Length: 70
Image (cartoon, rainbow, N blue to C red):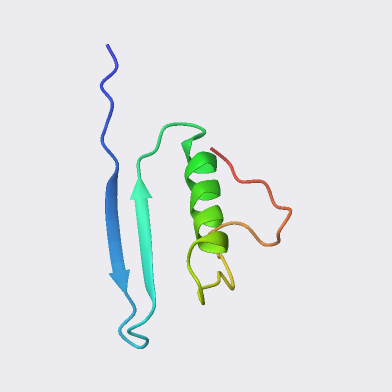
């Protein structure tokens, strides 16, 4: 029998820049990252005036067309 693990949200605030933070949510079920990422992107683009995603950095990915394993 498989037992599902609940995702845990981790927050790391950058001490040099108090308006920057890193959020990590894991573990996720396979494919759920796409769903979650698309929802966050749509929210940031349409619902939050004055906010914009300027960059995203993913460990192990060197350019925008690199595959993400998992």
